[in-house]
Image (cartoon, rainbow, N blue to C red; front, side, top):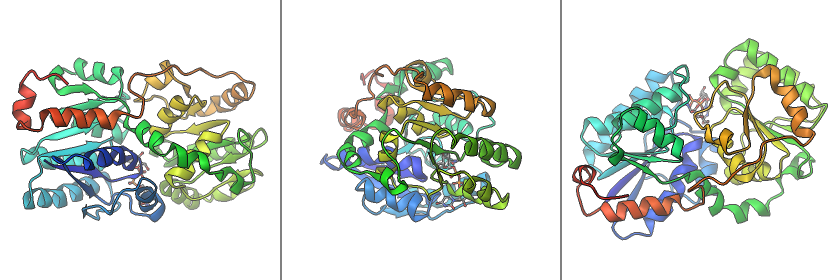
Length: 375
Ligand code: UD1
């Protein structure tokens, strides 16, 4: 069974890695990595392949950056050619980036079956490009692998047939558990002259936070004020660095004593910084989940989240810019939500997916989906 695993951007690599390694052990499966090239820098892509022990991609589409339509169009055009050269039995897309939607469109139009891993997440906010990618991908995919029960509910509410939905759990936790030993061996905080629990880790890259010069300036000022309470380590995403440079804001940040601005860290080094921080300030999706799993307080600088389970069952709190200082004070004085265990966030999601595919691989996917075979 030829299975394309589509990856494109930083948050995708830790989602395909556990599945790649699990499929590689199966004699009936041929996992085939397609990298669209949406992220191309060493520290946004190659470093992750290395940490996650992924081989070179079988196919690299090299699409690079561009507007949303350009990026989506370029992936569709190149990936369609690859699909026509050698047709896979299944295309697995992950997450919610532009390439996820583009690969889904190209495959669906050729009648190639698509499975979406991390299906059903909804922020109910169509100003987020990722929300549009999620809705389009889920409406076309043949198999919907969800990370949590709220995602199942969203899909059912949208009228998706329950036959298509399989709650397999959170694959990001598989990567974390797969590499826990290596993550725990590191002491990356020492590179910044810090101690465990003695710093806040910051990541910010959402267009809504970093593309508008006014809100980016406010954000920078608040971060500088925070350094009076706790040192900050802020690995800077390329989108954010570009906007900080264009608006001459790097100097404001550098005025903050105790604010480090490294380039993005590799997976193992970054997770070591997460494991040892006092709390996180972020607008990322995945970090909301990782901090919930680890029981680390997380302030998400966004008006909504597609991962509400990290609030109801986890350590995550949504936070407006003007609330940030008070919420930081509360965390520093010991007040933050406690996490509960979430079903199937256990490091075994890839095994569940492989078991699902193993049970069904002898049948054409279309027939499987219309049959009553249980997950
Ligand atoms: C993308 C995803 C977002 C995800 C994020 C993780 C979409 C719509 N957005 O956002 O969901 O959370 O990745 O990082 O798919 N750049 C580089 N080097 C790189 C990659 C990007 O310099 O390796 C620059 C690009 O030139 C561009 C900017 O960063 O100016 C943004 O890149 P892009 O892939 O368009 O979106 P992200 O903001 O990274």
